[in-house]
Amino acid sequence: MPTSSASDASTESAATKPAASGGVQSLERAFDLLERMADAGGEVGLSELSASSGLPLPTIHRLMRTLVATGYVRQQPNRRYSLGPRLIRLGESASRLLGTWARPYLARLVEETGETANMALLDGDEIVYVAQVPSKHSMRMFTEVGRRVLPHSTGVGKALLADTPADEVRALLARTGMPAATEKTITTADGFLAALEEVRGAGYAVDDNEQEIGVRCLAVNVPNSPTAAAISISGPAGRVTEDATEKIVPILQQVAAELSVALANTNGS
Image (cartoon, rainbow, N blue to C red; front, top):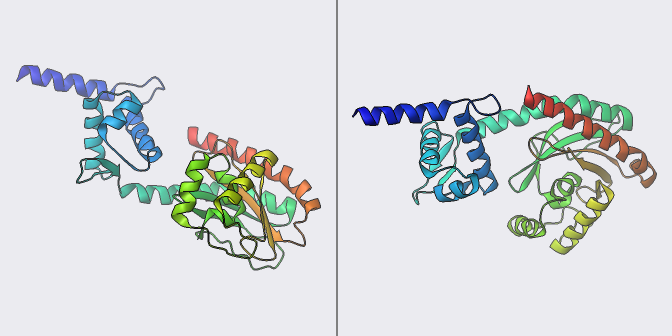
């Protein structure tokens, strides 16, 4: 019994000792495991986590047992582990906050371009709009906060998927299908991959009447965002012309860079 108690005390001490960053090591490890689970598609086995993280199986087992007990991880009947339902509430709250932090930057976009500004995230296989500041011009827009759309027909979707490996993009498109929202929607995987190559070359994405006839959208990634995010402006095709694009894109890129810095500071504070 004394040996067991000493071992338990040693384990507890190791689990709660300060990390190199000045935080608590067990917390850093737990969040790292959650991130690795998300990267793996949401479900993994202990041996996979051990191989990817370099942590010993007993340590991972102890951390996962705690995460299961708190509802942030579930153990499946096949003994593998999946992300748990309690994370959904945290994610939804974080998405709302991300939109709140972005609004002043979107307002600047509206002020400088005159068009409606949006922020969107990739949530699973879908695009979800988390923030919007409308243009002062009176115009009905298909975008609204909380709306979900498929990536292949949107500028933000192209921006968010531009650096994703081609095989992963093809797999996503196979899962969602590529229904045509308009006659200009890209409806083939090869066509969409070619569009992504154009995005990488140009540094921005375009939705040219692909989601809604009469509407053009310009979008860029928010670099180094804690979760993949893109911002965009949307407006009538008669205003968001090629000439206007040359003026708007540098503004979009500048605002995205400044938003990236703001999110990093918020993340680190």
